Length: 132
Image (cartoon, rainbow, N blue to C red; front, side, top):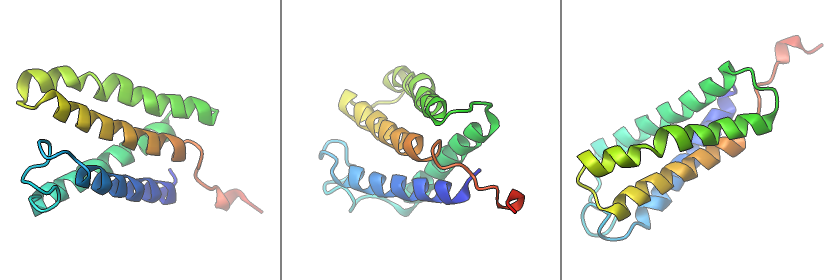
């Protein structure tokens, strides 16, 4: 695994999350202006969840036998399509959220997937111990 790529993807996803939430409509944000009502525990939970997602994506790409970067990109996007997207059914049945809120969360997940999909597969780990 390339830890520089993981750190870059994680940083870009955190930046995208801050921009995405600060631009949230008022009915999605928790209390009025978006970033004023966010608790520290929510931010820490978000950061941990995003790191676990990014590290899992990198681990999955490292453990597969896919040769081309395009196949790895398809795997990353497919993981969102077949793992995250079906959660819309769970969220609509068990979590009391509006359709706009669910769509907003899923669209942020897709943005994170695209960030990971366009960086992690194309930036492989260096094998400097094998170079002469």
